[in-house]
Amino acid sequence: MISQSLLEPIIFQLPPANERLMIEALPVLDKFGFQVEEFGSHSFRIRAIPEIFTGKDPTAAVRWWLKISKKMRPRWQVNLNLAWQPEFVSAWL
Image 1 (cartoon, rainbow, N blue to C red):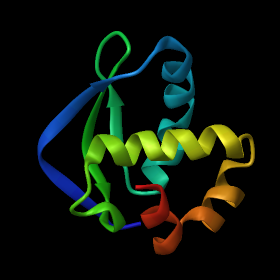
Image 2 (tube, helix red, strand yellow):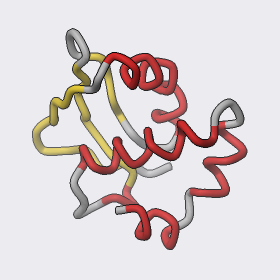
Image 3 (cartoon, one colour):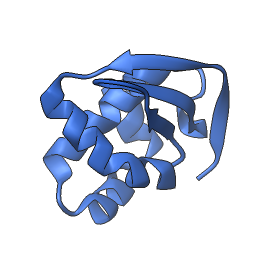
């Protein structure tokens, strides 16, 4: 997946319940073009987003992904491949 690097990384926080899901999902996020890393307690840093999200709010894009991934666990790869269509992404953002 082609990524768009951000000029400046964005730091955001998640509640503890979502933090654990995000940590588990980091390798999957990477596969789909997000570059997100842990950045302190309950915080994450976004360095890049998939090209499909160019012009969108990077934090909203990551939160969108987290929201749909909660519904699609544990079969992330199969389900997210199906959801990774421009029409689907546009409907959520």
